[in-house]
Image (cartoon, rainbow, N blue to C red; front, side, top):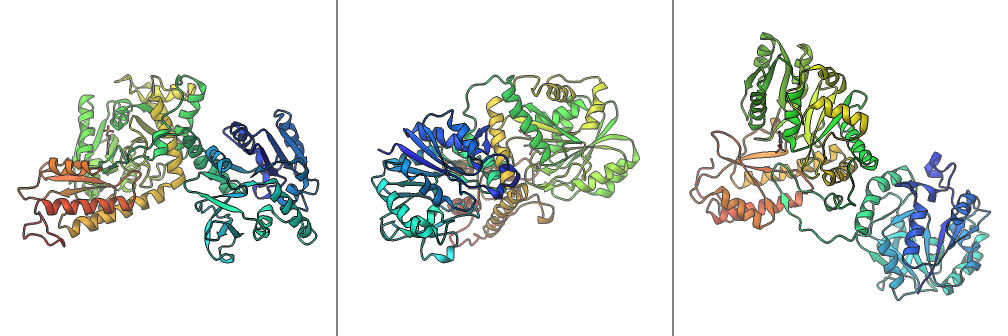
Length: 623
Ligand SMILES: *Cc1c(COP(=O)(O)O)cnc(C)c1O
């Protein structure tokens, strides 16, 4: 049984500049804990009894830490500036009398890996992983028995690359001796020798087994980019994996939200119970609110107001909170524009409906005619009309509003998080969106992003509503970091993780991924003889209304059931006077999922006799 560990912590971490000016790399903090301390705790949890830390740069910081852990012994390498990690190890060799685990100080990793490494019967093992593409990898070449042949940062130095080095190794006390002998003879020539190269150097003398763990979540933190990845992505993943959650079946939701989520988002909901009035939870909501603003606006000018509710709550909150007796213009070119009219009816707003085709781009000339003919305080529009996938040009409408001093209200429910939006340059006063569409979070949080100075002016209006009162919710949150009434606690934890993942992927890249899936969809349905309604240049590329086959065997409910059995969900149409069904391409899905969808659709259409193998149409009219 291995009960000793060695942590190599002599280096200066120069690539992290300011961050390592006053503390060694191992003291970078994630979740308010130094990463090396997290590592120490993991080692102690798996039964390690003695930890020797090879220190050097700012060694006193480690000495201080050691005072809190009687199991930790620090051995200082005074020549850390002129030597490498092998010398730090060599320098502490006499303190190690047993087989041991060797770790670098700047790692974060899953604990399970240590347990697995200890259990292996081989006594000298390099723990390796799948490729991380971190831009700082050490690649490993092995022979057919998975024994180390060589390793290098340069792929071209190696013949057959098997895996990537993680910085976690198991070494027998016997091999340590060989390693030190090898090192001693190399130091005069290469004092900077690192321990990995020394391992490669003795690989002809000693069998060093390379154990590759697939799906091993870990990272080393050597530069700013690594740190960002660690904080936002790797660390949350490790936390989730360490909870040992069971497998969840993956369904592909091609309905326009709630969308398919990642497992990390699903599991982010499993947290200790917490009263949402605790400061800790206030911080979670504060982070969510700030980051939601930051995705589309400058937080000096805009504020995000959160509500528990479906997306419609956000739209309703705006319409019922910010409009006084003045006239409002509502653009209706689909079911969601119509919904805004229904809300306006319910609150008896003084509004005019501007109807426009659900397939064609807005006619801005007649829109301006109406706008200029009477005085409107607000204009409401849907960004991506989810009925058909028609994308309204918000920039142009925003400029019109600027010209006529009208505040613009945008329902961006199905565009936010994918289609780039800039509230300021688009002149948007209020934007409504929700947690469960392109953000890829769970359903239950609606939010409004408001131009703060516009929102401030609404405080004097006589309230028409209570729960959804935008200004009250905003004011209360800015004072207390709390919602006025019980928030959906676990949904917000999922939203926090979903935002982390959105920022990690980036809105632009997310839209690119969605667009690829959309192109696969359009190519596929076109090949199968089906038509969609909105032209490419006006299309959001996020949701598509497809004209239903007009043969007697076709039945939407049947088709829906067929897809549902196969793990896919499609959506009925929502258009008056035109029979359509809808396919969205949002969520944690890939182009591969869409390819599979098209294959299934083809099979269904063959089954009902709409087309035949090889995709010939059966002489039946396509529309
Ligand atoms: C999804 C959606 C909504 C909100 O729907 P909820 O069912 O209330 O979440 C509103 N507007 C648009 C454009 C949408 O796509």
